[in-house]
Image 1: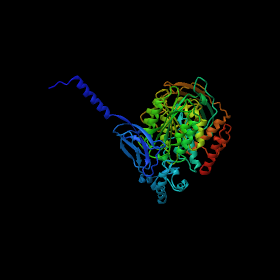
Image 2 (image 1 turned 90 degrees about the horizontal axis):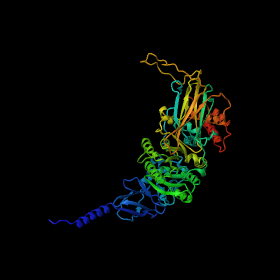
Image 3 (image 1 turned 135 degrees about the vertical axis):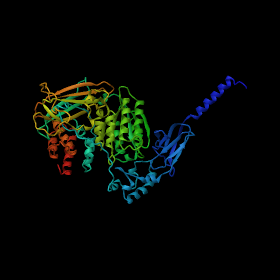
Image 4 (image 1 turned 30 degrees about the vertical axis):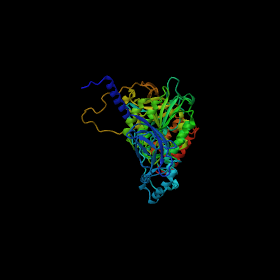
Length: 637
């Protein structure tokens, strides 16, 4: 047997390594995607490697470029066309997509809602089918489906459609006896989505569903003239006590928190990722069209040191604009203008990709934030509330914050939006018109975009010598265990620059006859069913003490501030107190609260009209108009 030389062994080894490298070779595949019938370029066709959620989209000329391991399968997907799968064996692959008329007829998409074809009459279904030819012909010009069909959108509105909106249900806070439960603990909430969503229902002549109304978000929609914090701390507590307008025997405690204000030019550099839902349910002027208009308002506020990337998702997710300087506004606007709606909704994949890009471009000491624009109708991949909660809790550890902007009607998934905002160090707004977009993204730009404090918690200790019982008005989804207040691992709400937060406690003074807290049967296994020890009071004249904990946006250790509150029995209440209490009263009317007392719409209007002095933007006057409309719609109150 001949001995193999060292040189031969080295050559064989090199050949083997070369073979392995060839088998695992990564190539860049380029090409153009067109309509097979017309040759028209298809913009925003999704191109993915099979088995991998992240991908890219074709540009306005239908061109694409993607890195892929040679031999892997490329998947080409586009709404209304048959999906194509092609093995990546060469560097140039041009794809001609064939229209899928069956899929085009499965769903009727208008600028107002999405419904199954079966929910419409045969006549409308025929109109849709006949409109497919025009839709294919004009697809490159504008894939906003509602403008490509051969009929006017208002004709669709004559037909009934299924309302599939989803809201979380929370049991209303009840009264608690101060002796038994002296502490009340909750996370702050700066969200105001419930108010603009309520307004949308009223403006469409409908009563808002009870579960769609979160009283604290109605109150926090408005600005109040609270004392500003000192330079040392990012937030400041204030308080006011007065007569409860829906039960004059009780006292109402208003707790206000004001975050420090920062002028736009002094805000730290921003690393923003626009995460935009371009699925079929977002088609139309009041959805994707409004998203584009909203974000263009935000773009006007960007500076050269700010950066924006754009990620979109439908059946899959992809980056359509890499991180770009805020000075290049036209490039960002053009990228937005090219977006069109179509396909299913892989929201989880979009969220993961957006956070990945935000981490890649992370600015230390800056404002790193994902801005999600969606109707919340996730239906591919991570879609359930629990799955979204787990995903966002993992992503928030990156130090990237989240702003959730909700759009649309008929299929709006408010419950999922709430989870994303609450669990992702974020805030949540509902955009029902361009005026609301201007409020959130221009007038309140700093508060929406830049956090000055995170994990902000409140704990109120009531003095049972003066308070017999109390209840927190709203914040049902934000309640915490008392032990959570000192636990820095527990997540809580964030406050943006200039934000204010208001919370009301309805208290029952000692000596007032009181039955609302209910009673329980005597205990069976304890002989002494009365109090086991006599409570010794300190003799303090304080009604309660407000304690607040917060962390710096990039910190892990909380700081605590406190404010003792005395009831001065004054009747001279501020206009902010009066107006906010009127809003709280409306919230209790709309939710049919068990503790609404003698609330009614006329009383809400009267109190609100007495407090219109802090109304530069006209939001308080709009509130009065909305309540007057409700009064005409709901004759029961």
